[in-house]
Image 1: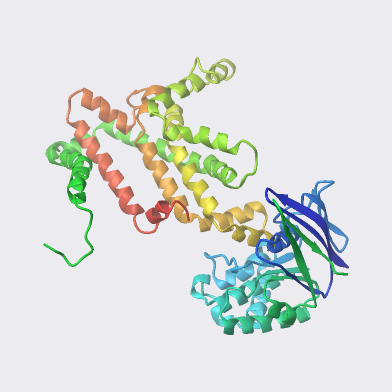
Image 2: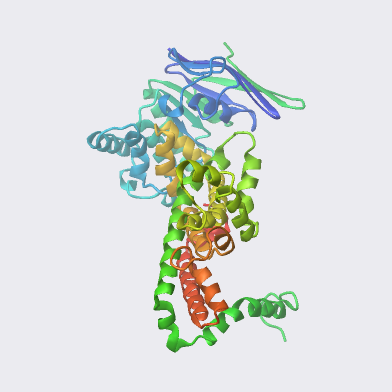
Length: 225
Length: 268
């Protein structure tokens, strides 16, 4: 039971090859310099990008198969993404941000209310429910983003530099929160970071992106195993 | 003479006066020469009211049409990866810089009775578009819709793409994402684009008179009525011009605040 990537994607001056297998319960950190394809890897898993060659699958379900043209849309993958700088919906309140995925997936009113209350309590943001993203601190925004992602109970959790925009205090606080979240999380976690201390603390395994620069940037992500 | 402020380049004040004189003075002249006693009579006579009503009706229909078909096209231009996008964009935005009368000629040769498509419509379905109210709308659309498309394309491009990614991965389909996330986020540009389009359609003259003609009560919009009464030498031209100035001013006042700044930034 695992997430398997064996694929590549090419852009004009960039080529990324990924060979990666991450099992359930594993928290895999992906580290590498800027522009090495960390975010691209997450977007491939989420379905925000399609691979040019190869396959991506999860628990035997095909996400992306370049040869056959098969491609599962993002909303069908049960993937939760915490984007860099949160990407909270600016026109929605904290409560509506968190409830967005539940409503989009067609849950009834009672279920939405129930999960929303649970998430607000779990992430200690009950008092922020009616606020808007612009009224929140960086750490608070990160809590809301995490609540929004966890509310839909994804199988795969993708985090893109979750603490890079925070000050030191908030960073420690969010790291602790993420550590607790990962401990209880039954699925697969991919954590992108360029902070070694963060990955050491949060990840169960680490994969480093190899980078070669000729006329094009050649990046490859391979399991050490 | 030194003022306690950072000095400006010498002479810009004088040059600005020229600009103000050329822009604002003609408008003031319309007010100065306005025969106020006859204003209500000129504006409220049957042909003026017909022209006003036709103008309001057609420019609103044009704006609605721009929204329904222009918005998806703007989205395609901003996000689509299809080939030939830049050629399509250039072609569809060309009417913005084209003399409107050329637009009228183009419409005539496309949808007129002798036109490429108009001939077929007439022969097969008995539908004649030229010199009808539909022709008024088509003329206005041809000239005004590109403004809306350009504004919306820019808004879509400048929008944070991660918001769309977030919505999709949270389980929203493409339409749900467009309606619940994209449109609310670009709302300031959307409103500015719609109002601009409406105003441009309301003022349309060249394409309309060429393709739709100038028949009172049928295709004579307010700008055409102004032109006709000016040719006829009566004061109604002044009164109707004043009426259009009031409407335009109302738009500008309505647009100030959050909408016009959004347009100035060219995006959200």
